[in-house]
Image (cartoon, rainbow, N blue to C red):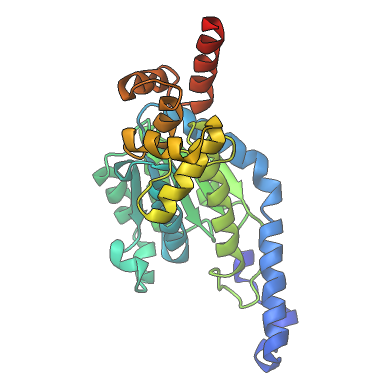
Length: 300
């Protein structure tokens, strides 16, 4: 596995000055991000396929062990506050369970049966999207979990840093990030982990865009849970509709803090009517506002 290769260039890394070591590690991070570019088309295909399944009330299921598991949890945990994605529709299948997120549980990654069991316990189905990560691409827990998800009929996405790996072979959507060897041999928390984080960011955000949770580059499904976010929401509604922020604040109050509903209420609809318009357009604010524009134009 190339991620385990020992580099002659860094054989004396421990004798280098601190600034030399930091510069080398920084260059490695740039290389990791650059390695994502060849995967963009694969990410886009996976996002489109995944979004289609998730429109049917499916769930996003993240699978991983060690560093990959922790990277997966970080991505999934951010979907609710950013996009109001229901927490009940995010599932984490992690080797060693929740304890492994804060304490080493490396031996758990060898337990293939545990991966299968967690998929079964989560009642993964055909409407679910299962994204599995492993730098090596051969972690028994992760490979077994993804294979089981594929047998069930879920949309499967495999993300790995080694070519020709079992995880990629098991996935409907294989995403190979060729980050090469690590500066510290086998320390995949570095280049491989960075690249995995970038891929998941792109994948999950692209899915949320497909599902109408972004409008004009704004997080229109954002939770308004504190003063800063309420002010941001008021500014969003004012920007989207062209109204004053005071009017936006009143609309948000009537909408219970829902930015999409508030952006429709501003045009004179009550909450029930605004909800009906959004429902007709499957939550797409762009389509809902286009309908309101046509109605208003016809009434002039």
